[in-house]
Structure formats: C-alpha cells, structure tokens
Figure 1 (cartoon, one colour):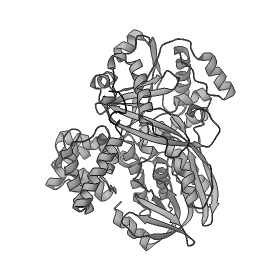
Figure 2 (cartoon, rainbow, N blue to C red):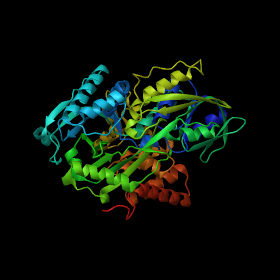
Figure 3 (cartoon, rainbow, N blue to C red):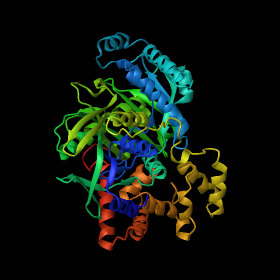
Figure 4 (cartoon, rainbow, N blue to C red):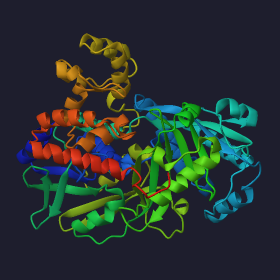
Length: 557
C-alpha cells in the first residue's frame, strides 16, 4: 500500500469501476468487499483513513441492546450476527467482554417501555431490574440464534460488590452479559483496506486526497501529488455526516442525512480503572440516556452524550458535555471524585442517520440504507446510517445495490473471510512469536507485537536494523520498525496519524516531548520533511492534543 505506487497506478490507468469517497469504516469495508469481488476500486478521503466518525466510536462491537426498547429487533439480530462474526473473523482485534448494567430500582420503567414499544416513541425513563433482565433475556435469545450462546447473569448487591467495588449505595443489583470490545478500531479499518489491495492489486486507496468535478469527469488531488482525471462507472458516497455536502460537490442537492454528536473522555483515574478491571459498566444517566465506562491502557474511557446536531461537523461544547459525563460517572462511583483535571484525552464525532423528524437522538432509527441519485457523470450511491458493528453487512448490501449499475459484479460472500491479521489466527501465534525473537525482538515485546498485528508479518522487514528495534517508548511499547511500517506501507502522513490512528496507546494520553521529537526525526527521514515542515507537524500535533483537552478556565478542576 505504498503511496507512490498507488498514485502511479492511477496515472497508468484512470478507469475505475467504483470511486468510493470516504474512508471511514463503511467506505473501507465496501472497498474490501468490491476488491474481493474483482472490481477495480478507488478509495479516497480528504483526511486520514478512519479519521472522522469512525475514530470517535465507543470502541465496541455490540448487538445494540438499547435498540430493543424501540422494537428494532431486526437490527439487533443483524448486529449480533455481525458481532459474532467479528469474534471469529477479527479475533486478534475484537474480543468478548463482560458488560455490567447496574440498577437502583426493581420495577421502574415497565409502563413507559411498553408504551414506547407500542407507539414507536422514545420517552426517557428509568430502567429497573425487571426491565433490564427482560431485555437481557431477549438479547440472549437473539444472540443464540446468531450462533453464540452467552447467557446473562443476575447479581444482587453482595455479589455485585465482589465483582465491582465503589458503586453508589443506591444500586441494588445488576445484569451481566457479554458483548464485544474492539481493541484498535482504526487498525481494523486499515486492515480492511490492506485486504482489498492484496485481493486486487489494481485497486487504489489514497488518504489526504481531495476531489472536484468538471465537464470531463472527476479530478482527484492527492496531497503533494498531481491532479488526476478519473473515470469511474459509479460513485459511492460513504462520508457519513458529510454525505449531503459531498453530494453538492457532485452537483446534487440532497438532504439524506442528519447527525447525532457524541463526546468520549479518557481519564487518569487509576483506582477506578483498577476497579473496572476487564469489564464494561453500561449505566443509566439522570435523564435516562445510557453511558459506558471501562479501563483502557490503565485509564478510564467513558461516554457518550448522543445529542442531535444540525451540522455535519457537530456543535462541540466541551464544557457542557464533559460535565455531563463526569457528573453521571461520579453519581455512579461517588468515591472516585472525578475532576476535569484528570481528562488526558477525548474524542468527538458526529454519527449520521437517515434524515427523519425526531426530538432526541434515541428516537432516530439506526438502520442503514443506500440512496441512489444521478449526477451528470453517472450514478451516485449514498451510504446512509449504519453502525460500527455492521460495517460488513452494510458493505454487502451496498454491493448488491451496485449490481443494478454494474451487471458484471458478482458480490463475494465475506461472512467467513478473516480480516487482516486474523488469517490463520491463533494457529500461527507461536510461529510469529518465534520469528520475531529470531529478528532480535525480546520475548515481552514480541508478545505485544503479535497482540497488535496478529498473523500480519509485514512489520518483519522493518525490524532487521538497529533503528527498527529501537524502543521509541517502552510503556506503552513503540518500536522504530513499527513507525517505518506506518510511513512506508500505511500512508501515515502526519504525527497525528501516528498518535491517534496507527499506534492506539497514543490516543490515551499526550506523549512526552522527547517522544514527539524522536518520532518527528523518523518521520522526516521517511517523508522527506525539511526543518520548517518538521516544526509545523509538531505544532499541529500539539494543537490537536490541546483540542482534546479542556481549555484553561473552561471547566472547574
């Protein structure tokens, strides 16, 4: 996936079956689906791969327990089936995790939940223990139909205290069930792209690539590259909340999407992180919304706010949203006494839904669909809605719609095809560990690398030199060879690409200045930066780190 080779491939042949605009999780999944189906595809994004909404998720592969309240049983069934496939097809990056739902009453919410189900409304309400266990029993039933039997448990307060300490005294019990945790969602998106290029080397994926339209066709402009006129048979708009804005660049006036914005926080709260352990707490807020919290790299990851927004970019109000999250988490764990000053990072994103009339985000349908339009250069298909877990089925559905425009397309069945480093995993785990140690990697570091990359051995060619084995940072581990792979094979173009998308622990807390400087040195070598560019990149990273933190004086400590 070398960038220069990708640009050369477009120069050599500008004809593509499909142009996919938007390299979030859905665009990446469609790229893989169509490449495996022997189509020649071009995937572009004006930012980095998986840099938008897909990088601001709750990092879960889940069946959508809360969607049962709205009676959307088909979506829950589909989501659970896709979650279970991810357990098999991306086992190096997606693992089962216990989820705890605490409650403080036994029967609250039954009448309101019944009315919501019967009237297709979403009134906010409390959820008592009986309602939680009815929902979890239904969830168990749908999960078993999808091939995985993971029955939930009911815990009283004493049993719950043995599992999770520090809860509010008002909590009387909990339901415990199993869902999925995505260890590194941005890497999973990258592996979808790599699978597509491996399956069909004629396919091209370019980040930091703008586009425009003229009378001759569509022109793409890769950063620091030439303008390239391309001739796709079909365009697929997979830009999520920006669908309508991108359609306008294609000469279309559409109102296909609306958005819900959400903030997640990362907190330096070691006692709470220790109490959470390897479990997720899925808890009710004072206004009836649902938030989660779990341990991530020794910190606490928590959110989200889920509020309707009128703009594709959202209306970020860090003070309001962070106070909302911290207040509700402190209500659940009073002894934690969480403060604004403990925030080490955050993510903010806007999730797209099909445009409907709705008062709250909870009342918006979470289904996905494809809307078809026609521009002066041909069909334009907009991928609308969807959720992270169902990226494969959304891509499959979109490919079937594409057959009406591409009669030669025979969509490949991807239900049982492993993704990236999940090929032959964990069968080759021992082989990979031995190989890395033969290259001079310590046993402890080899364990970390195989946990990140599974069976993917592309990194091996970058570990032979002293620079490749250099520990840029020991905890969490970052090797020079990893950086070389990110720059040479994964189109990392900025320092932010490294810290927020290629190297997952970088997202958790701001790195030390010495680490930033060393990574900038290595980046300058691979990307041929001069000193002014090197300084601009470091400044840009610091700016992004500051955006993810509360501003001085913005919130009380």
